[in-house]
Image 1 (cartoon, rainbow, N blue to C red):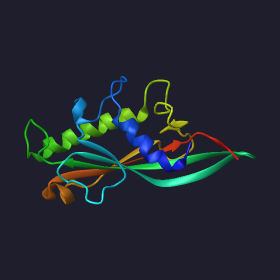
Image 2: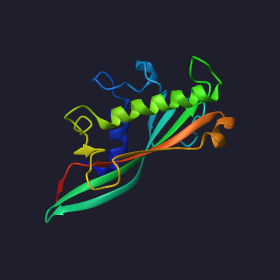
Image 3: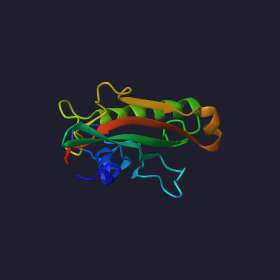
Image 4: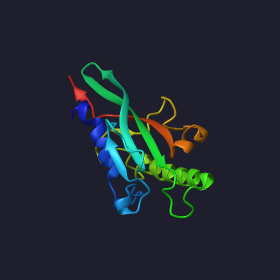
Length: 166
C-alpha cells in the first residue's frame, strides 16, 4: 500500500453509498454535489463540495522493522447559500442545512459499527487514541462568507495506514 494514494482512498470511501451509512452525494440522496480528492485549481463556489486534502503524513516506527504511516486528513467544505429547497436565501435555514450535511459527513467518517477501516482502505480512521480529538470540525464564521454566497468549514481527523515491514 502506498501513502501517495491515501487522499484518493479516503475520497472514494466518502463517495461510497449503500453500506448502511449515509450516502453523501446528491446522486444518492445526500446533500453534497461533489467529493473531490484534492483541491481543484478552480474550485466551484456554485456547488456543495467536500475537498479531501492531507495536511500531514507521519512515518511512525512501531517496532524495529515495522512502520505505520499516519495521515491527518483535512476536508475543506463549501456549502452554497440558496442550495436548500425549503427557503433558499434565508441565512438561518442555510446554516442549519450545512450543520445537517456536516452531521452526515461525521457519521460516514466514523464508519460502520465494528469496522473503522473505511472498507479496508486503512488500519483505522478517526480512532487513534492518545492523539488529538478524533474528529474536529471548524466552521468558518458565516459573517465572513455568507455575503459571498457560501458557508465553509474544515474537518480534521487522522488515519493510520496499513503497516509496512522495512
